[in-house]
Image (cartoon, rainbow, N blue to C red):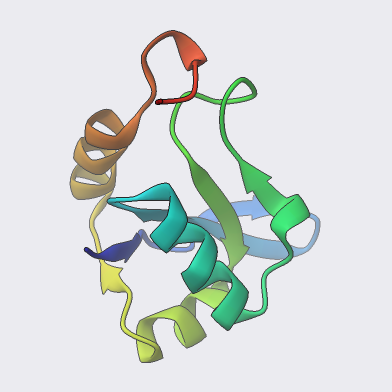
Length: 92
């Protein structure tokens, strides 16, 4: 399984932000924990259809050093579509 990050281009609250996504939600949570991102930062159903964390550019750099795969905007959109939860309902 893999963890992915896109470019940190979204400006908010004085930082640049990006998305941290994974092929599997459990892997996403494990990686975020190693990265030091609080679980309360998780965004998933029903708030959003694709499980992810928004992380800062600084956290992104650390994520890449820890093995996250850098993705273009097009690639992260494809991952979003692949991992999204239909109708915002958790997979069982």
